[in-house]
Amino acid sequence: MKIAVIGAGLMGRAALYDISRNNSVEQVGIFDVDGNLAAEIATRFGSGKAVVGGLDATDEDRVTSLLKDYDAALACTTYQHNPGLTRAAIKAGCHLVDLGGNNDVVQTQIQMNDAAKQAGVIVIPDCGLAPGMVSLMVADGVNKLDKVSGVKIRVGGLPQSPRPPLNYQIVFSVEGLINEYWEPCTILENGQKTTVAPMTGLEELEFDGIGQLEAFYTSGGTSTLPDTYGGEIGFLDYKTIRYPGHCRPMRTMLELGLGSRKPVNLDGVEVEPRALFKALLSRNLTHVGPDMVLVRVSVEGTKDNAEKSIIYEIVDRQDPGTELTAMMRTTAFPAAIIAQMAALGQITARGVKPQEIAVKPSLFLPQLDKRGIKLTITEK
Image 1: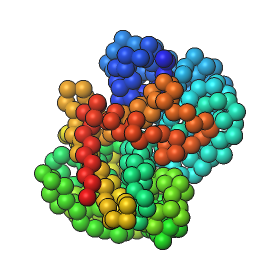
Image 2: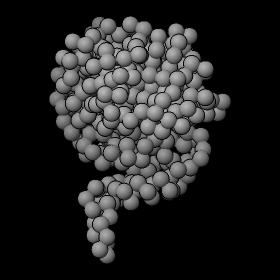
Image 3: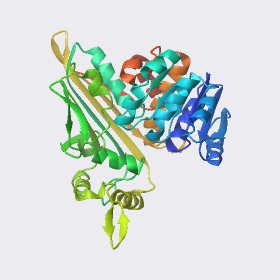
Image 4: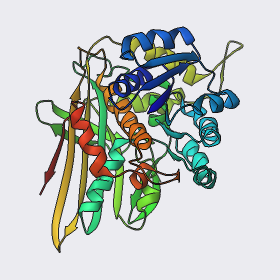
C-alpha cells in the first residue's frame, strides 16, 4: 500500500508520522513546493518509508503523473488547491482525502462526483477535526437513535496555559482563524438550513479538570452535515470553545473591520485591514507552549420511544515525545486514518462524498484510541 501526502507543513508532518507507522504501508510520499522541507520532514517523521519530492500543487499534470503510483493521497495544503487536486486524483485513479476548511470549495469538489465515480475513486473532503471527525461522531449518534431532535458540536484548540490579551495562542492558520470568525455560520433550525452571524450565541460550558469556558458560533465546523441531515435532524449547530473573555474583544475588533479585505487608504498607502490583523495576531499570539484540543458532540433524540442522549468527548494534550501538538494530532490523524481506510478498501463508496456518508463510524472511531486520542462516549 502506497499513500502520498501533499504538503509538508504542520498537518503534513503529523499525517506522515501516522501513516508511516502502519505496517501495511510500504511507502509514503511527502511532497511540497519546498523540496528541502519535504526531505527534512521525511527524515524526522517518515520511519524510513518516506520518499520525497518538490511539487507545485497547482500543476495538475504533474500531480496526476505522481499520483498514478499511489493508492491514496492526503492533501494537507491550503484549501484553494483542493479542486485541482481532486481533478488530478480522478485522472490518476487515486483516492483522495483532504483537510478542507471552505464550504464553497467543498461544493466545487462535489460537482465532480460523477467523474470520480466513473474513475472508480473516492474523494472525501473536510476530513480534519472540525470540519472533520466530529461529523463521524454525529453520524454514529444518528445511527444509534431512532429519531434525532438536536445535535450540538463544541470544539476548541487552546493553550494549556492561557495568556493575555486574548487567552489564546495560534494553533493553526491565522487566515483560517479569521475566516471562522468572519464568515456566516450554517446551522439547522426546525430541520432547515439557515445562517447565523459568527461570534454570536455566546454560552458558558465546563470541562472536568479545566474549568469554565465559553463557546460561540464560528463558520465551517458543520461542513456538509446540514445538507446531509436537513429534514432529518431538528437542530444542529457548531460553536468554537475558548477561555472566558476571548469572544467579546475579538468580535469588537472584527466589527471595526479588521477582517475585511477591502483596502483602506492611509496617507496615500493602500492597506488591507485583514493583512494587518493577521500580522498583529501572528506577532502577539504565537506563543511557544503546549496546547490542547477539546471536543464535545451531543446528540439527543429518542430510542424505542424513550428519550436518549449520547455525548462524545475528547480532551487531547500535546505529546512532547513526538513533537506533535494536540491540534496536529486531532486534525491530521483523522484524515490519515480515512486515507488509509480508502487505500485498504474499507471505504466502498465511489465519487465525491462527505465522510458522514462514505465512512463507517464503527471502523473509524476505534482508530482514535489506538493513536492515544481518548474518546469517551456517554449514553444517558
